[in-house]
Amino acid sequence: AFIDLSFTDNEFTIPQIAERLGISMRKFQRSFALTGSTPTDYLIQKWLEHACQLLWARRSKQGTQLVSTIAYASGVNDV
Image 1 (cartoon, rainbow, N blue to C red):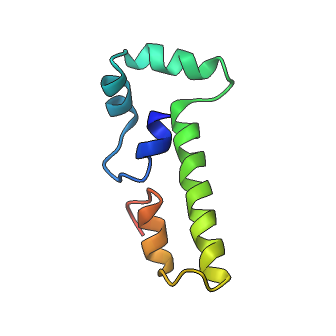
Image 2 (image 1 turned 180 degrees about the vertical axis):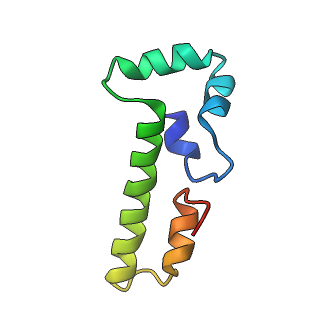
């Protein structure tokens, strides 16, 4: 839930998440391994889902953001 609320912050890193949750990086990674994923994979998935939603809204004329703005808002730091 914490990642779901904070993933659009471009300064957000996996070690920061673990620190804020008060657990070690290794424990954080192991918790994701139980689902067959990694924290990085999950974060990338969230970025892509968010970007898809914004691009779809732009395509259907509900949004007017530039593609570069959408990328940055979705966690991409280098456009």
